[in-house]
Image (tube, rainbow, N blue to C red):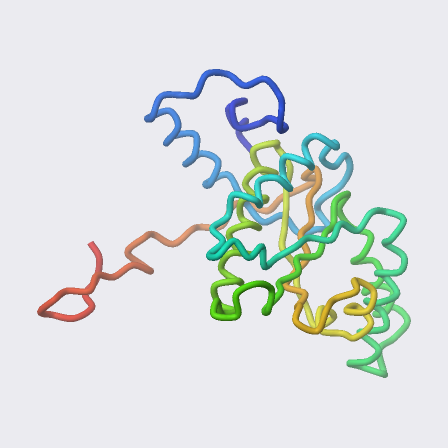
Length: 223
């Protein structure tokens, strides 16, 4: 990945250069966004973000839109010492879904807990704060928080990925992470040094997913 300008690569409290000109800021933002690529956890290794870098990644989430300032999401870090219990939850969840799962398949499920130096669970609360703010808005806020974190990790030169799966709904996982009845496990975030990567995939162009509401013709293609 091309280096991201150093003005985006700092921990909270670190000395910062003068803010860039508007055109340069736009170019920096475009470079950062376009550099982000999903790197599967099995392709992420040590070293992971140092403590100040991880703090910057976590602080980036605070700048997500949050209607009503609910803070409807939280993140639970899974350090190395807690990977073994998570591995057993993954294996147990597999056996609950498929009692005929082989020892090899259970081993593969356990191995997923030990990938990537940084692993955290994204949790969304459907009831925290104002009950008039529905779950869809809370999920959008969580998605923005996660994207901020992924972009900060990218700016620091790390790879990242979001992973989900049926284990997120398992009672054993909910118990391990002490989720409240109103909370749901949304996904895991993995961050680490890129060991290998696939070629970047072709991205859609805006006209593939944008249209315009025309007063006389209804919804029409853009531009």
